Image (tube, rainbow, N blue to C red; front, side, top):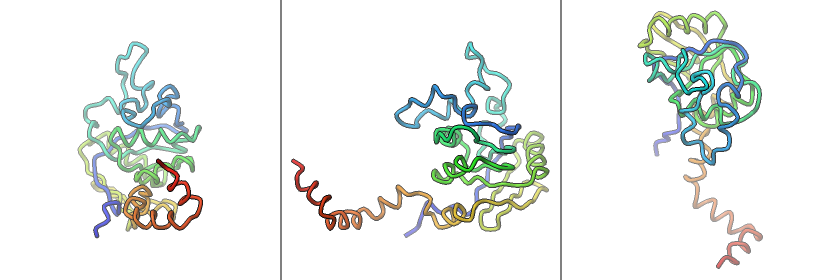
Amino acid sequence: MKNDSIITALTGTGLAIRGDEIDTDRIIPARFLRCVTFDGLGEQAFRDERFDGDDKPKAHPMNDPRFAKATVLAVNKNFGCGSSREHAPQAIARWGIKTIIGESYADIFAGNCASIGVPAVTARHEDVKALQDLIEADPAAAITVDLEAMRVTAGALSFPVAMPDSHRKKFLSGTWDTMAGLLANAEAARETGARIPYLALAAGSRP
């Protein structure tokens, strides 16, 4: 049976957000963490940097119509630092981003990205800068992140990238999606539960 969770390569147009140490509070302000689900968080990504106090748009790449359909995000050093809130990668993904290329990330942020199927790869400063320059000069340029070759290509650019091997293996095998794995093995999980005395007892006591 085909595993739709396998991710070997992703291609799309890019969005460049420049700056080091962009923390999770800038990515998704704390007042939006009260949501019960992650629905609608994409609209609030970088909210305070995209809109002023009167809710009027500021100059920001996410407000630029040239990048409205971007799926590849290019960032700089220590992206996603600060609070470990999982809402940050959720907001970025729900805005439309499917993969991130950066100089470095906070470990928990990168792990949270991996758990929702958003590969976050790292590259050298000069390669990221060249990619950001290309994105801003040619918003329609196709960018491919190849997780098998561990390489990014975009126009004349081609450079190596890296990511933790544990994350890469999960993408290539499709095991990053733990919920899909549980659903695919629901019957086995029920059979196992029936053999555990306290779970069987709890199930038998239900009305």
